Length: 252
Image (cartoon, rainbow, N blue to C red; front, side):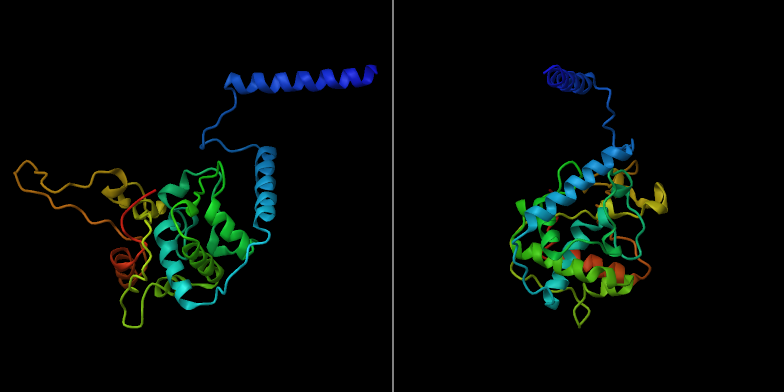
């Protein structure tokens, strides 16, 4: 009886100590401060097991359709590159400050298609991964998954080639009417340095009608495309942002 009473008392004291620690504010929640090993392990295992459990029973469609892969590539370029990178891009302005660091999806992984769909649709709490299912139809999310299955096999040139049709133009709108986020300002390569990322990343872009000291109007700057090793790749991204149903300029 005394042993049981002692165990209950110990648990009570532990709970009170935990509550006191929470209210003390001693734990550093700053993203600039790395997790301790046990906290990182706990979060990772909890997330991994949760995704596997909740993704069970999801029916996976045919993901080999080339149009799905192409649309998924364009969606990925607009919404995901800033965090998960692409072939030829080592880091970005946004990714550099995230904790935990998002996985580099071009390197592949262990998630099955159903699990990828669940993650893309529902997001991951306290990780920065949004629930795209709040603003996108399941068909659009499956397009993303179809592309993710292909991504680890792609070179940088093959990646951008998916955004072109045979005549070199961006694919036409397929009728989706959902809003999509353009995160091009956050896709700047962080390795290029503070000033090389362009004024757009700092909100310094001149607005129409703004005059300098000489009274001359400054034209609004166009959003910069993600940096690439070839001009054709840059024009491809620019075309994708103008013509694609994933590039209406809305952000979430």
